[in-house]
Image (cartoon, rainbow, N blue to C red):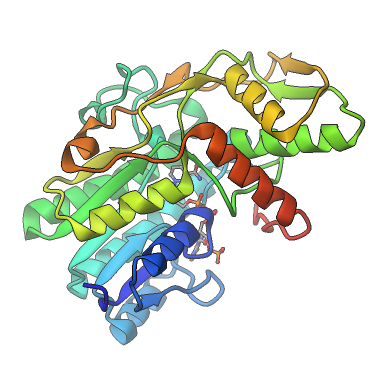
Length: 315
Ligand SMILES: NC(=O)c1ccc[n+]([C@@H]2O[C@H](COP(=O)([O-])OP(=O)(O)OC[C@H]3O[C@@H](n4cnc5c(N)ncnc54)[C@H](OP(=O)(O)O)[C@@H]3O)[C@@H](O)[C@H]2O)c1
């Protein structure tokens, strides 16, 4: 198993890099990855040529165009079409070239906005999506369905993992396009070094959210790689949530900011609550290990160490 050729698509992203680190740590020696400049996954011919040349045994799809509410709202076509192109080209090439295992990564936004909480895998497609990220969600749902169809029709081990909100090293700290947790780390740090100036945060602070440290997600991917999970779709999270206000206070404490926090209620809140039911993967034997405060502290330290070297966001 440790000598299998494993292609990690998106290996330089936050998730792909964590998966690479985890597989490497666990003794996998035959890992391959290419940047989007070296292989544009939107181009089907390039993807098929790459599979023909490299013949990976296993493919992990951590490549995607990702972003927060603002980016989703401003670039709906890119979020829909680029994600479908990337995943369709990978899934179809993996089918054609007899890849033995394919792990597709989506996100909890595939589930309906008002589905019963905590979100179970079988609430998929039972009612409407959260409008602020439906473009991205619809693309991801088609990826889940493609993997399910391949399992059903060809009996191949194509599995989808749906992580909750992730954070950690290599996260996106660009305030225009980032998710809530890295955005807060940056805002509190900037305010701290500006004499503990007030920090303004989006929304009411009341929505409930769940967060998973990205290295824990990488553990779950390795677990999925090493075990035949038996079904096509599994949630990955902690199963615990907190309000955005509680998250802000935790980050403020870790960063050491002492100024006031203002809530800009004119900005959208998004889904009122988003908590994953993670019992399906837990029954298979996987559980998270990093508590939120510890993960935030590691991420904050990474932020400080890499402040001059953040990723350039394409949009
Ligand atoms: N971040 C989260 O909170 C979160 C939560 C749940 C699920 N996920 C899932 O995890 C996956 C990865 O997310 P992430 O946070 O790691 O994103 P990320 O840091 O932005 O990384 C995305 C990766 O995709 C690659 N990519 C994008 N467009 C490409 C293209 N046209 N051709 C080739 N590669 C391309 C990028 O490569 P280059 O850098 O070379 O351009 C980059 O390595 C996504 O499927 C996402 O849904 C993320």
